[in-house]
Amino acid sequence: MLAVLVPPSAVVVGGIAGLWLFLGRTVLTWAEIHQMSRAAAVQEVFDQAVFGMPRSISRSALPAPEDIARIGGAGVALAVDARRQQLLDWYPINPRDPGSRAVAIAQRANAAYSDRLLRATVTLWVAVAGIWTVIVVAVSLITQMSLGSFLLGVFLPVLPAALDAFEYIRSVARAARDRADLANTIGKRLDDSDPVQPHEVLVWQERLYDLRRTTPQVPDWLYRRLRAKNEAAMHAVAVRFSSSSEPKS
Image (cartoon, rainbow, N blue to C red; front, side, top):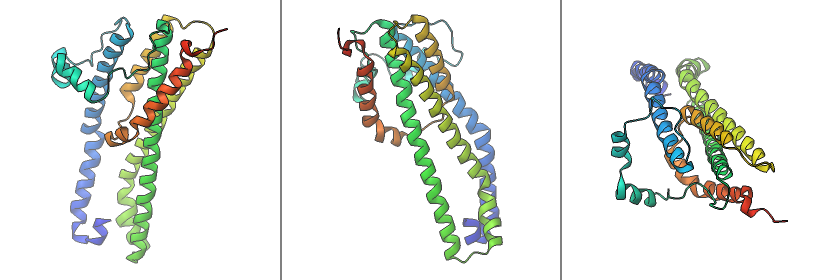
């Protein structure tokens, strides 16, 4: 759009767009995947400690303990920071539930929480894309832009960016579906009368790790905006699955 409104800027704008597309498909993508893998490995160690799970696989993406301590802190500082961010007792674990069932409830809560957040992200970006499209068309009509100028100056130049946006939205939607599938699978198992077995929670934990490694990032401000509502829903459903909340015969 800028290249049409200010023709002398066409070369500069085109160069910036091309550079951004190249970096986005190479360096930035690699950096994002690298950081996501490291974060997933750290979260895996945390879950294993909370759930009392064995560490059967050594993740190559796991940062050194010194790196984890440098970023997250240690000792009193770590506890203070966790309390400040309201992260203590985040998992909805009822100590009266059997061990494997309590872990399964927490795993399902994690998957369902992420599903809600990811679906909200999809809704947000679809709305942004729709608003942006309306604005572009409106500006083109107001400035009485010819069809040729619109195609060459607006439509074709933004196709690469539109493709990236489409791929991002599609990947977020797919990640939400995968989380929902896992949450539904665990939920159906919790509805069974048979006790949850330890090997089942290990399988679900491995699935959570795989999802965390590949789940697209969501805006921090959206996470903070929806956190209270999502956590309230998560805890409410966890109570229903808790064996201590079932009516006694």
